[in-house]
Length: 269
Image (cartoon, rainbow, N blue to C red; front, side, top):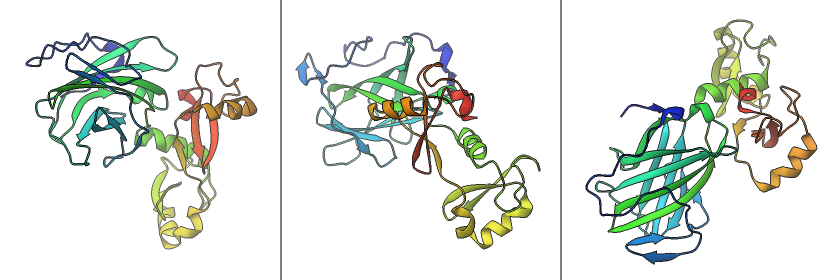
């Protein structure tokens, strides 16, 4: 299946071979009820799943939702935690980006890895919060609906760009990263560190503990209500010097475990 760019998603195709369950766009109910074969349930508090996705209990089943720059996946498990077959399952994902009223509809189909998935390019909204309504059918003769709110993670190239911008200089030579060509990534005690050239790689490998402490870990993080006072306190973007909020929802980074806010996705690079 080829990836489809986000702005050009067509209307949802009809799901062939399914029961006459309507998968029309609708808000996901917040309280549990059953009718006409549907089972809409308020999802449990999410946790980390086997595929590092968001795991929650919905309608007596466990769903694991994985969002990546390359698309969406849903894995299903019995209440015991045993993986469930989705061979006869189908689904629809209705996605919206925070700050935009537009919604994008995607069909989810069984994949070889045991998930219901769609390949779609989400890299353009990396670092943005999204809300996705999932509707799944063909699972134990019931339909399952739930909502997932998350942040689209950056791909490796985007994550590296953030890390390089934050690190700024080579810890070995002291030269600005980029002054000797493309920075080179090297592992230092489990941290992804950048040096100015291949000549500095051996120094890091010989004493990784020395250099690992010089670079804080940088990652895109999910925004919560607790961030509001921190955004107000920081006030301005450290990259563009724009007021936070002037470009829409700020982007949250964790730098060495501490929150840092940018005015827009473009400042990640």
